[in-house]
Amino acid sequence: MDGMAAFVAERIRVESDLDALMSMTPEDRTATIDRIKQEAEAKSAFKKHQLVRACQSPGFSLTEGPLPHNHDDPKQHFDSRVVGWDSFGRIQIASRIYGNPHCSEGPWSENMIHSRDDDDWAGSSTFKIELDISFEWEHNGWPERLGRVTPAVLKGPHIELGDWLILYEKPCGMWIPRVLNEQYMRPR
Image 1 (cartoon, rainbow, N blue to C red):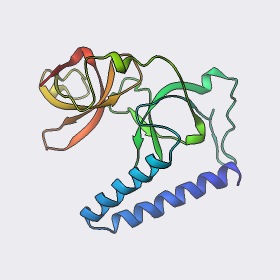
Image 2 (cartoon, rainbow, N blue to C red; image 1 turned 60 degrees about the vertical axis):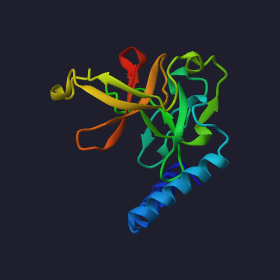
Image 3 (cartoon, rainbow, N blue to C red; image 1 turned 135 degrees about the horizontal axis):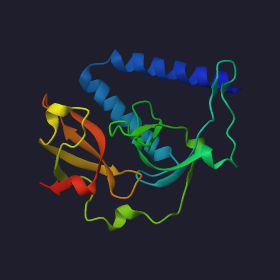
Image 4 (tube, helix red, strand yellow; image 1 turned 90 degrees about the vertical axis):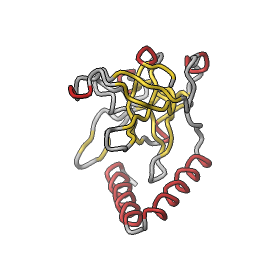
């Protein structure tokens, strides 16, 4: 299957899966998503929090789909780590945040990532997964939150030294992910 046909087939599969999930009761949907994630993790060649090197396509053609990856071009690679699997069974990896700590992960193709054997800073950190923390809001995208103490939970290490993927509680009670560095955290 060529690049564009494979891309379209994947989009159709995701749309079909989404339709099926949305037709379920909330309880059945949650159970199904949990099962999909567990099955995807069990058959994956990668483990959660594993360090990886991701390959990325240099672009997208409307007629050909993703442009071919050049394995010799360092600009088409970046260091990352596995953060989990999404509701459709696709592996999710940490992504560069480019100034927005809420854009911190995304689905990837397992054939476009490779394990790496670098030393992992997370093993020597005093902070650990599932630790309850709090932090003073520092991101000026929401000026009304600046300085407010916000409860959060560490979900896993991110890419850069000391950066963690966390879930924090919004005023409405919903928990959402973002990246936060250890220097801004304190255990609760």
